[in-house]
Image 1 (cartoon, rainbow, N blue to C red):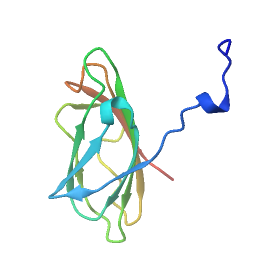
Image 2: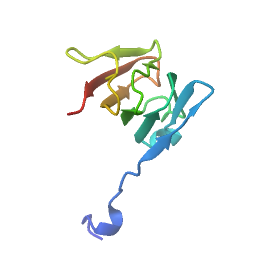
Image 3: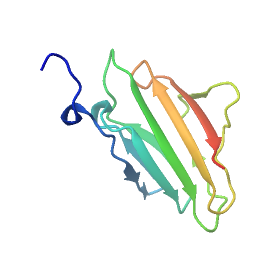
Length: 120
C-alpha cells in the first residue's frame, strides 16, 4: 500500500541447472523471467538460448559454467554473440574451473552482447 516495498513484493531469482542434451545446452529464459543458470560441462556442447522476452523487451542472463574433473570441454556460443571489449571469448579449460558468462539482447536475440571471465 502506498508504493512501499515489502518482503512479499521482492522477486528472488532462482538458479536453473541446464543440461547437455545431444551436444546442445539450451538456456530456457521462459519469456525473460528466468535469468540465472548453471552448466556442468561433462562433454563438449553448443549453447542455445530459447523463449526470450519478446520484441521491445530486453532478455539477459548470467550463467556459471563449470568444467568437470576431466576439463578441456568446449562450449560453442551462437554466431549472434558479440564479446564486449576485454572479455574472454572462450571458457576456462582447466579441470573444475569456473567461468561466468553474462549476456544481454536488446533486439530479441538477433545480437547478444556478452562478457565472459574465468572465476578465481
